[in-house]
Amino acid sequence: MSDRQRCQCRHRRAGIALPRRLAALALAASAALSMSAVRAQAQPQDAEDGIRVQRGGASIRQIVPVEVIEQQASQEYEQLKEEAQAKKTLAGDNNPQLVRLRAIAKRILPQTPRWNERAKQWKWEVNLINSKQVNAFCMPGGKIAFYSGLLDQLKLTDDEVAMVMGHEIAHALQEHARERAAKSEITNLGANVISQLFGFGNLGNMALGTGAQLLTLRFSRSDETEADLVGMDIAARAGYDPRAAVSLWQKMGAVSQTSAQSGSEFLSTHPSGRTRIAELEKHLPEVLPLYARAIDSSVGKLPAYRANMANLGGAPVDSGDDDRQKPLKK
Image 1 (cartoon, rainbow, N blue to C red):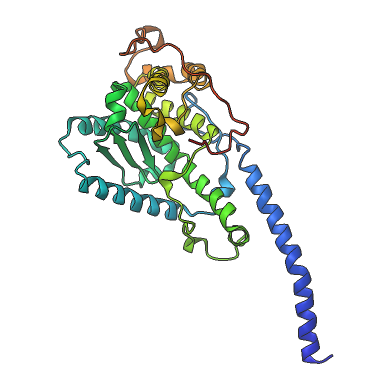
Image 2: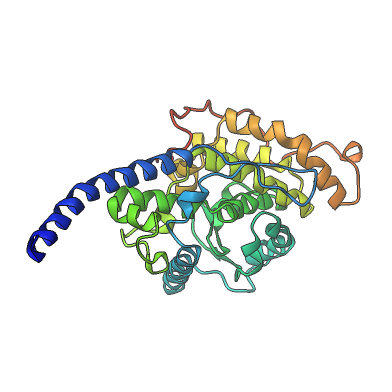
């Protein structure tokens, strides 16, 4: 057989093998994506008490390196601050509300490494944007922002601010944005991501090339529940009353029904409903001891909780989700 014939033969064999291999890789990637919807075994915590949640999507998250997601978060956060500075809406360091937010964060942040060791390395920032928006977020790497509308319209107490902050920080600790970005990459890049997933290429060079912005990512109902519980845990350990989580979401429900801000970013992606509040109430027995211990008391000695707003009542009936892993829509 001539060299040319041998070469043609090799090409024919490769032409047969390659589609089969791609098909196998596609099947494996599909299975990995499906498995991300199934929560993995519970991550061991340092203490025997408190919230214990399961983390999922570990294999999927690897598609987007943690350094990449944190770098992009930092860039987006700096851009947001620059825009707010240009509009003169970025609160100065002496702003009383910002001083308050940073004081609350100072108590909460030491509780974060138990959920994610990288939190020790994060360059945490807390800023306030003067706006009527009812919104707050924590980006990967510990970049936190509150909008004054959230504090003012809901008349948030320190305990309720801690519940919001804990919730948003929990999204970052549990790497929900990284997981969402990874799933978006698989959807948008297809076979290219399959090759990255299975080691064909340099993951470290991969960025979010689809134009995805971290602030536009939508979390799922499961992500929201997980953030509620983890956030309540770390806030309680910091000495903030976890019962405020219930009044917080009752306020959210009231605002969503009566205010012009019902279409706000936060309320549209953080739906308040009876199921959500019931889930928080179910887990209060797990976090109340953490709070009591943090303030050198006991659960039996805690005074009755009273919200600072009247007529909170119940919450809207949840619309429900066919798939708790599916990103929430506005």
